[in-house]
Structures are given as C-alpha cells and as structure tokens.
Amino acid sequence: MDNKDYYKILGIDKKATPEEIKKAYRALAVKYHPDKNPDNKEAEAKFKLVNEANSVLSDPEKRKKYDEFGENWQQYEQSGNQKDGNPFGGGAGGQQYNGRAEGFGGQSDFSDLFEQFFSGKTRGGGSKQKRGGDYETEMLISLEEAYQGTSRIIEVENEKLRITTKPGAYTDQQLRIKSKGAKGSNEANRGDLFVRVRVKPHPQFTRKGDDLYYTQVIDLYTAVLGGEILVNTLSGQVKIKITEGTQNGKMIRLKGKGMPVYEKIGSFGDFYIQLQVQIPEKLSDKQRKLFEELKITL
Image: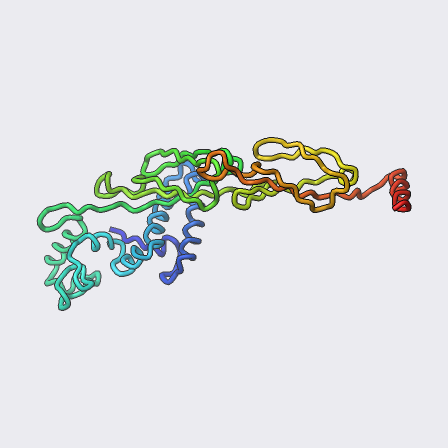
C-alpha cells in the first residue's frame, strides 16, 4: 500500500501556513481541473488527490491528526481506544505506535492490530462508520453569467452533476453540495462537495459589491453643448442625457442598473458612469479658427 504524502501532493513544506496551503491548492486545482483536461485520466486522478490533500490540510484539526498519525488518521480517530494520546490503548504506561512492528510482542501481534485498525472493524466484528472526505473545486463564470445565473456540468466519482448559480453570484462564494464528496463506509457517509465561484474580470465593467462602474468616452462638442448618448449596461442599452458644460470625470448614477443582490429577488445595485471627455488631437483650419474666435470672446 503506497502512503500518500499530502504535503508532497500540494508541493508545500510541512510548516506551510494556511495561506500557503490555499495558494498551492488553487494553483493545482486550476492546473488539473477537468475542464482544462478533458478525457485526461491522469489529470483527473491528480485533481482528486489534490482535493483530498486540501480537505485534510486546510482543516486545522484534521491536519493535526494527519501530522501525528499519517494518512490513516481517520482509522485511529475511529478506533475508540484512544487513551492518554495512545490510539492503541494501554494507558499512560502503554507504548506509542511509531509505524514499526517493535513493541507489540512480535509480527503476529502487529498483524492483528494492523487488521483491526486498518480494516475499519473491531475485534467483535462490528463495522465502524467512516465518513468520506470533502472535495473542493472551482467554477469560473463570466460577469454576464453572474448577472443572469448559470450552470456547469462537473464529474465527481464518475457521477455527472449540474452545479447552478443564482443571479448575483460573486467571486469566492462557496456552494456546498451535500453528500457528493468522497465515498465513506456507505452512501450515507459520503463527504460534501464545495464549489468555489470565480467571476472573470470584465473588459468594460468593474464590479464593487453589487455596484458596477463604467467609463464612457464623449466628444468635446457634446460635453460643451450637451446632447444624448447610448450607454451599454448588462440589462441593455440606456439613453443618457448630457448637460451643457459637462466636466471631464463627472460621475452619473443609474439607480438599480447594477448587479442583482444575491438571493434578494428584485433588488439590484447601481450603475456608475464616469464621463471622459475626449479632446480632439487634430483640428481643421476652420475648426482652429472657430476655437480662436471663441477664445477671444471668453
């Protein structure tokens, strides 16, 4: 049986901080994600290992037990014989298990104990309930999909699942799908699947909470004389009135034209438009003359 080194799987040191664990996991999850590696069994296997390692090392209690007992920390925990820190019983005078056969009265005793604690059964024959580990993955969506709501098909344990987001989904939002993680001793003891949402940056709109920000370029003549312009929003084009003498950098607020507020039907953030006046770089002789005449009169 090959031992799994969760630290090695994530490529981190045993003294890694929670932030370093999270950073390493995310990089590997993106690298081996099924969406980026379709029909690649090796990448799929590595993706599962990365999720398994993260589910243990990102949990302080699980990590502590893993550091003490190794890959089979769950079997030690469930043995029901932990006394004074000794998973094999014996009280304060008992000998601690160190991964070798010494101290158990010979190979036969060790084999019995190995079978007892690694098979998930007690000497009396009763089965121990073992919960499967949690899986974690990412779901990358566009800002338009975050606005409208969307879904993705992902495969977990050879089962295809449709993961749906509601309007207003946001980056680092975590969706929990119960009992769709690693298999346990039976179906009722499966772990959970956690899906972290990531919204891609938009080329035009900047999101701040439920509000959206947009820079609209207008020509000098419209800024001076006033007029109307069309502005794109996620819900369609909106006609905006520009008043005479509009200054560069002016901010216009469109109430209720921002992002949907998550799980609040009918509630929306606002849409802010910053006007950027474009100064003409080249003037015709007639335009230059008119500007000079205007300058004299001011």
